[in-house]
Image 1 (cartoon, rainbow, N blue to C red):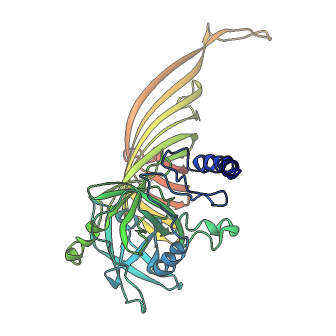
Image 2: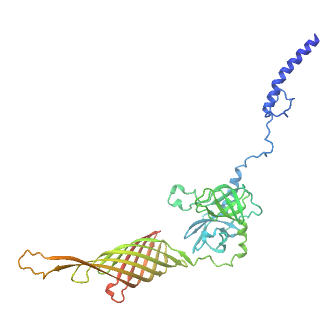
Image 3: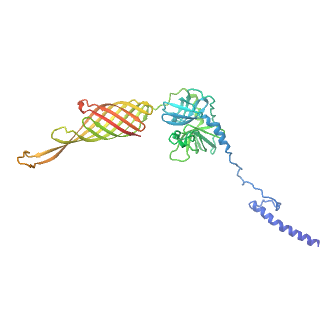
Length: 423
């Protein structure tokens, strides 16, 4: 009887343990190393896959902390060419930025986060690495210079960029006020090569010269450029290249290009003296030291003019003209006034139409019928005329007047008026 009771108990215990063991093996991924001693009431223990580290996403608070640490050190740079970004570096009177933000600029205005503005000047730069240091006229009280991050830069390292994308657009779109300046974007270091690093943080026009900072608020690089045909590919100069500029402060002349490309123009042109002819022109040019424009203009005009002989019924004039001028530009706020001197080369092609009558042309009994026909003749000639004039540029509109003097016969001198669109 006792044996039968023991056998019954063993059978009942085995039947109860089998499902529990099967459940334990299933929860452990079917591993043969599952613990056979886990009972029915024991909870399965979750464990990470073998070989993968346990990682938690970084807390978002670091973004806010970095912004509060860095934002007041970022400045807005305004020149006659546009706006850009910069930041205090090394001392409270020195601003780091990209060279193309301040290159060839006559006026550099730096605005801090509290709204104060003052002038600056470039005291060191590197064209190779697109970097510049701008010295302010006065020290900014309480300004905090950002620290450079030395050492290796890791691929995938989180970074932020603080700057002023599309700054100034809020003047046209009022809804954007307060959204574009001192804004932050987040990304990672995508690649590192030599003196440059790549990031996928959103960068737009106006961000140039701003800092690329790490999670500690230290500067990794200076925003330089974005590939126009790509998405999320921007490059920045390594901060080590910026540190190399410090010994050069005060030893370099301001960055200047002796020659700069000037704007193209497409215009409507009128020549007038005794007769008026009209046409179109296309021009362009260069600027020497920014203030001395040298322009070349080609034009084609046509119109009817007064016949030069009594037997000519009508004269059609087609004129090709090439003008070359040099002058000096005066900036008057939004308007540029450029007086100039130069020369104009004319090629005039005149086509005369005259009526030839056969016979003596006498008529005794009206009505009279005579035989006649229209005869055309043409001639061409070149002329070189010195000229003096002035142009007025307002935005993309150009108004230009010149007096072109015919030395041999002053009656052939021309007044030239031009209305053009520049681009």
